[in-house]
Image (cartoon, rainbow, N blue to C red):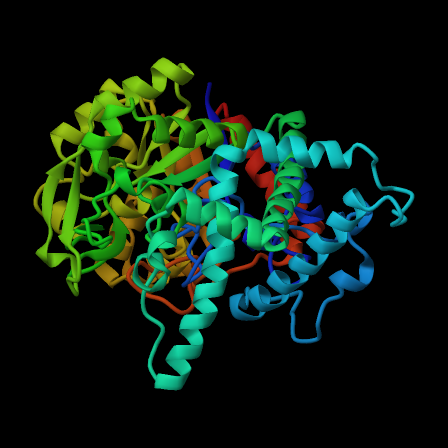
Length: 542
């Protein structure tokens, strides 16, 4: 069945204080998708973000991001008092996310709200509001029990991390140096090694802190479940995102050290990245610890099975980022300054996917097969019966054109099968409008010729860019392709320029912060855009 959808992360939703949430705007966005004839909402990873605010560097691959919790909903449920959710004057409602301010405010506020909630469910003398559901206590303890396989370690990790981060920051301030390191650098030895007795002792001595983290995850899970159920009721399927690797500073690595390439001294031996490519001349040094695939094979890839199963409880499809790493991954010696010093190592191949399928059945996965893709990677993708990605922004090469025609696999006329997902661009690309505004004349004319089917002058092509017509043609090209699924970033629907770019790989500072204006989701402007998309979805049988 042919489908179309929109790519937008919940942090980019408008309306709420500081950052997008699982609140009213999430439901309004689902309504927008329904009006637009869209069947897909694609997200970035939903985990709690760490340094740099990247959703691809999370403190846990199983947890949800506390910053996405909606305070209005907590008050409406009777789980928080209004005074605990009051927005400080320095928090903006409109404009891009200021992560520093949002983290400072919401992290402290959520701790206080969690205390309030725990009082409600444990102290019968505390009066709850009229809308407080008496079944909430049982729901919370059921949530903790069902998610104990990851939640206990995550809550313990965040508690220990909070203590040692504060201690390291104080030391760094005294010594006038930067805080440098993760749990395997400055935690107490037994805790660093995840010694069970030491971890249990910590939990017993920091019960309140531990329970608060569990409560916060309960909040997020309940709210997201409501959004997901609402989307289902409207015929909208959600595509989640799983990075192949997990963050070094995460409960995933700390609690499962035997499954990663970690030496006897507790230090990583190799880290992840990609060699020099389209995005960076020196490659991308991600720094994620690499898996010990032999160790994972011994227990039947149980950790990966649990990871995919958990994600499929949250979404309907899962896009696996950097799929090529399952065939071969770029291993960079720990301590390298760039990714140039790495080498290719063999991954688990089809064996991993067979193990997951044996446990979970057929998998609604999408393979992010971008970058340096070999015949072996394509063969693995096809053997696993997974759709790959076709990104239109990667399709046009003026040098290739001069050499005798456009043979690029990302061009719609070169798609070999319908089992793929077409995109105008991804979160790592500039917006299509921004790209067109930055291209050299020759490349711009090439794209204009392809999309219009006519010979264009430089000025004619630039006029198409200024009028936003070229970006609209780009969207139409993706939707009209033979790909079973076509996904358009919301920025491209509205032909927004570079100021709305979500991420620039190998850079830091201003990434992940874009937020949509409310007019893009609700109101006359949104209605017009939805009607345009609806017409295209009907025209191209999506």
